[in-house]
Amino acid sequence: MGCDSISVLARTLSGVIVLPLLAACSAGRFDDIDEFMAQKDKSAAENFGFIEEAPSVPVYEPFAYAATTERSPFDRPLDVDDQVTRDKRAVVKPDLSRPRELLETFTFDSLQLVGSLRRGAIEWALIKDAEGGIHRITLGNFLGRDHGKVTQLGPNFVSVVEIVPDGTKDGWVERPRIIELSAE
Image (tube, rainbow, N blue to C red; front, side, top):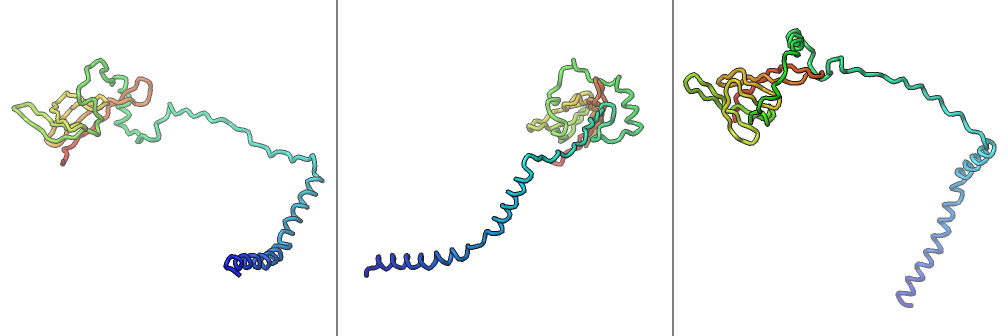
Protein backbone atom coordinates (compact mmCIF):
# COMPACT_ATOMS: atom_id res chain seq x y z
CA MET A 1 0.00 0.00 0.00
CA GLY A 2 1.19 3.46 -0.85
CA CYS A 3 1.00 6.63 1.21
CA ASP A 4 -1.96 7.87 -0.81
CA SER A 5 -4.05 4.80 -0.20
CA ILE A 6 -3.28 4.88 3.55
CA SER A 7 -4.43 8.51 3.84
CA VAL A 8 -7.65 7.70 1.90
CA LEU A 9 -8.30 4.73 4.19
CA ALA A 10 -7.64 6.89 7.31
CA ARG A 11 -10.08 9.59 6.10
CA THR A 12 -12.75 7.01 5.35
CA LEU A 13 -12.39 5.32 8.75
CA SER A 14 -12.49 8.67 10.58
CA GLY A 15 -15.65 9.61 8.66
CA VAL A 16 -17.27 6.25 9.55
CA ILE A 17 -16.43 6.74 13.24
CA VAL A 18 -17.17 10.51 13.59
CA LEU A 19 -20.50 10.69 11.69
CA PRO A 20 -22.42 8.32 14.00
CA LEU A 21 -21.05 10.17 17.03
CA LEU A 22 -22.24 13.52 15.66
CA ALA A 23 -25.65 12.11 14.86
CA ALA A 24 -25.94 10.74 18.42
CA CYS A 25 -25.04 14.16 19.92
CA SER A 26 -27.59 16.08 17.88
CA ALA A 27 -30.48 13.64 18.40
CA GLY A 28 -33.22 15.25 20.50
CA ARG A 29 -31.38 18.55 20.87
CA PHE A 30 -34.09 20.66 19.28
CA ASP A 31 -37.14 19.02 20.81
CA ASP A 32 -37.87 22.03 23.06
CA ILE A 33 -37.69 24.44 20.13
CA ASP A 34 -39.96 22.25 18.03
CA GLU A 35 -42.48 22.09 20.91
CA PHE A 36 -42.39 25.91 21.37
CA MET A 37 -42.98 26.51 17.66
CA ALA A 38 -45.90 24.06 17.64
CA GLN A 39 -47.52 25.93 20.56
CA LYS A 40 -47.11 29.27 18.79
CA ASP A 41 -48.61 27.88 15.57
CA LYS A 42 -51.57 26.53 17.56
CA SER A 43 -52.18 29.85 19.39
CA ALA A 44 -51.87 31.80 16.12
CA ALA A 45 -54.48 29.56 14.50
CA GLU A 46 -56.84 30.08 17.48
CA ASN A 47 -56.39 33.89 17.48
CA PHE A 48 -56.53 34.31 13.71
CA GLY A 49 -58.03 37.71 12.83
CA PHE A 50 -57.74 39.15 16.35
CA ILE A 51 -55.58 42.29 16.68
CA GLU A 52 -54.90 43.87 20.03
CA GLU A 53 -55.96 47.48 20.47
CA ALA A 54 -53.13 50.00 20.13
CA PRO A 55 -52.09 51.70 23.36
CA SER A 56 -53.40 55.23 23.82
CA VAL A 57 -50.96 58.05 23.11
CA PRO A 58 -51.09 61.13 25.35
CA VAL A 59 -52.24 64.29 23.62
CA TYR A 60 -49.38 66.64 22.77
CA GLU A 61 -49.72 70.10 24.25
CA PRO A 62 -47.43 72.62 22.50
CA PHE A 63 -45.36 74.98 24.66
CA ALA A 64 -44.87 78.55 23.47
CA TYR A 65 -41.41 79.75 24.53
CA ALA A 66 -41.13 83.53 24.44
CA ALA A 67 -37.48 84.15 25.22
CA THR A 68 -37.40 87.60 23.67
CA THR A 69 -38.78 89.16 26.84
CA GLU A 70 -36.38 87.36 29.19
CA ARG A 71 -32.67 87.59 29.94
CA SER A 72 -30.53 85.10 28.07
CA PRO A 73 -29.59 82.18 30.35
CA PHE A 74 -25.98 82.58 29.17
CA ASP A 75 -25.66 86.21 30.37
CA ARG A 76 -24.79 87.10 33.92
CA PRO A 77 -27.67 88.49 35.99
CA LEU A 78 -28.13 92.25 35.79
CA ASP A 79 -27.09 94.41 38.71
CA VAL A 80 -28.07 98.04 39.31
CA ASP A 81 -25.27 99.49 37.14
CA ASP A 82 -26.24 97.23 34.27
CA GLN A 83 -29.88 98.32 34.60
CA VAL A 84 -28.86 101.99 34.27
CA THR A 85 -26.77 101.11 31.21
CA ARG A 86 -29.67 99.17 29.79
CA ASP A 87 -32.01 102.15 30.25
CA LYS A 88 -29.57 104.31 28.31
CA ARG A 89 -29.36 101.89 25.38
CA ALA A 90 -31.52 104.11 23.18
CA VAL A 91 -28.75 106.71 23.42
CA VAL A 92 -25.94 104.21 22.78
CA LYS A 93 -25.38 103.15 19.19
CA PRO A 94 -22.30 102.84 17.00
CA ASP A 95 -21.54 105.29 14.25
CA LEU A 96 -21.89 102.99 11.25
CA SER A 97 -21.00 105.76 8.77
CA ARG A 98 -17.53 106.22 10.36
CA PRO A 99 -14.63 104.83 8.32
CA ARG A 100 -13.28 101.68 9.98
CA GLU A 101 -9.70 101.57 11.25
CA LEU A 102 -7.25 98.74 10.49
CA LEU A 103 -7.37 97.21 13.99
CA GLU A 104 -11.16 96.85 13.70
CA THR A 105 -10.64 93.94 11.31
CA PHE A 106 -9.26 91.83 14.19
CA THR A 107 -11.17 90.27 17.09
CA PHE A 108 -10.57 91.93 20.44
CA ASP A 109 -9.12 88.75 21.97
CA SER A 110 -6.51 88.44 19.21
CA LEU A 111 -4.95 91.85 20.04
CA GLN A 112 -2.09 92.16 22.54
CA LEU A 113 -0.54 95.17 24.25
CA VAL A 114 3.23 94.86 23.82
CA GLY A 115 4.42 98.27 24.95
CA SER A 116 3.80 101.99 25.28
CA LEU A 117 5.48 105.20 24.10
CA ARG A 118 5.40 108.79 25.28
CA ARG A 119 6.64 111.83 23.42
CA GLY A 120 5.98 115.04 25.27
CA ALA A 121 2.31 115.04 26.28
CA ILE A 122 1.27 112.41 23.71
CA GLU A 123 0.95 108.76 24.81
CA TRP A 124 0.73 105.78 22.49
CA ALA A 125 0.16 102.10 23.09
CA LEU A 126 1.76 99.46 20.90
CA ILE A 127 -0.74 96.77 19.86
CA LYS A 128 0.25 93.50 18.22
CA ASP A 129 -2.37 92.04 15.86
CA ALA A 130 -3.06 88.37 15.08
CA GLU A 131 -0.76 88.50 12.04
CA GLY A 132 2.22 89.79 14.05
CA GLY A 133 2.01 93.44 12.97
CA ILE A 134 2.66 96.18 15.55
CA HIS A 135 0.36 99.24 15.52
CA ARG A 136 0.55 102.54 17.41
CA ILE A 137 -2.75 103.74 18.93
CA THR A 138 -3.82 106.60 21.18
CA LEU A 139 -6.98 107.87 22.89
CA GLY A 140 -9.97 107.86 20.55
CA ASN A 141 -8.67 105.13 18.20
CA PHE A 142 -10.93 102.14 17.48
CA LEU A 143 -10.03 98.45 17.65
CA GLY A 144 -11.81 95.09 17.68
CA ARG A 145 -14.87 94.11 15.66
CA ASP A 146 -17.40 95.51 18.17
CA HIS A 147 -16.76 99.25 17.68
CA GLY A 148 -14.25 99.38 20.56
CA LYS A 149 -13.00 102.90 21.33
CA VAL A 150 -9.81 103.50 23.36
CA THR A 151 -10.80 105.51 26.44
CA GLN A 152 -7.72 105.27 28.66
CA LEU A 153 -4.03 104.45 28.23
CA GLY A 154 -1.71 103.30 30.97
CA PRO A 155 1.85 101.97 30.99
CA ASN A 156 0.58 98.37 31.23
CA PHE A 157 -3.06 98.50 30.03
CA VAL A 158 -5.42 99.91 27.43
CA SER A 159 -9.02 100.52 28.42
CA VAL A 160 -11.62 100.13 25.65
CA VAL A 161 -15.39 100.58 25.57
CA GLU A 162 -17.13 98.40 22.97
CA ILE A 163 -20.65 98.95 21.67
CA VAL A 164 -22.35 95.57 21.27
CA PRO A 165 -25.92 94.52 20.44
CA ASP A 166 -28.00 93.75 23.54
CA GLY A 167 -30.17 91.15 21.85
CA THR A 168 -33.17 93.37 21.21
CA LYS A 169 -34.12 95.04 17.96
CA ASP A 170 -31.84 98.04 17.42
CA GLY A 171 -30.64 97.86 21.03
CA TRP A 172 -27.00 98.51 21.91
CA VAL A 173 -25.05 98.50 25.16
CA GLU A 174 -21.55 99.58 26.14
CA ARG A 175 -19.14 96.91 27.33
CA PRO A 176 -15.84 97.92 28.99
CA ARG A 177 -12.81 95.79 28.14
CA ILE A 178 -9.11 95.94 29.03
CA ILE A 179 -6.02 94.79 27.17
CA GLU A 180 -3.18 94.17 29.61
CA LEU A 181 0.51 94.20 28.84
CA SER A 182 1.59 90.88 27.36
CA ALA A 183 4.60 89.05 28.77
CA GLU A 184 5.66 87.81 25.32
